[in-house]
Amino acid sequence: MSAPFYKFDLFGYETGLVIAFLIGVAFGFTLERAGFSSSRKLALQFYLRDMTVLKVMFTAIIVAMTGLLYLNLADVLDMSKIYLNPTVLYPQMLGGAIMGVGFVIGGYCPGTSLVASAIGKIDGFFYVGGALLGMLIYGEVFPFFQDLTTSGAMGNATLSDWLNLRPGVVAFLVILMALGLFYVAEMLEKRFGEKA
Amino acid sequence: MNSQPEKYWSPYLAGFVLGLVLLATFVIMGRGLGASGAMMRSVVYAVDQVTPAHIDNNPYFAKYGGGDKNPLDNWLVYEVLGVIVGGLLSGLLAKRLKFKTDKGPRISVKGRLALALTGGAIMGFGARLALGCTSGQALTGGATLALGSWAFMMVMFASGYAIAYFVRKQWI
Image (cartoon, rainbow over all chains, first blue to last red; front, side):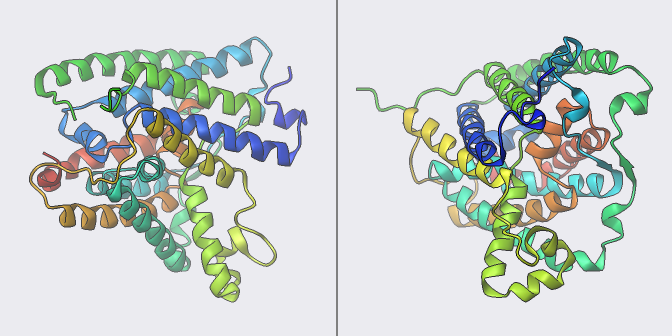
């Protein structure tokens, strides 16, 4: 068992920053290749005409999820040392609801807006400017609703805790759901599809 | 020489590669990907240059840049610099580098830019409340089966679909 490498001190903080940059390059490159540098392509998701977002996201999730489970099972990776997003249910759901609105109005999410800006999309620049402004506003008003930001805190809860099923079973269900969604996505594109 | 932009990858190929990048991040670093956190840190850095006392007096800003803390000394900041370079590299190789505005046929460029700014602000605000964005929550938390990340993902897409009708002139 030697992964995650950083947590087992195979390299230090500064090497980690170099790795961060390289991982970022791979991440940004892939997002651009997926077509996520186009706001219209991203937004057509919400009109059932181009389901690329759903296909890319769920493929990525099931690949990484399955990889983690196998590496854990093979005793290569210590799952308890992998960062798990803490669950703080109410701000996450409210934030998600707000972001859905921002997504369909703005046409990007934060990561994709950076990639769009990198290749010269002017709506990308405006979106990034808006996002920075929105974050500044959030920080300014944060003291007024600080209590909300910790409400529904459930620590390191996972889907398998919630469903009371083993992680492998949950992963299997997630894969089934993803395959079902891919099938529906293909049907929708056949019917409403448009090349953006 | 063909100057047409190259086609995008198949969504399943792009998703597979993205999944491997995410898995590699977990294996090497023990953490996932992100984007909005680095943008937040840039905001704190900028405000800190103008009025450091304001950063120290606000509990949210102080977490990132209070006292001697440098908000840019962080893993995510370097990752996001890479994202920009990676996007640029892909666009360059695919002949997609060009100043243009993406929009549907029924809206003016000005209208689209105003909505991009507005939507960005809404998203930026929401992403801080939700403790992360599509990268940090949906993708990273999705792959680790984090409960709140899945709740976040479902609500975000439901909300997008619910609102889509009202801004359809922007896109279709």
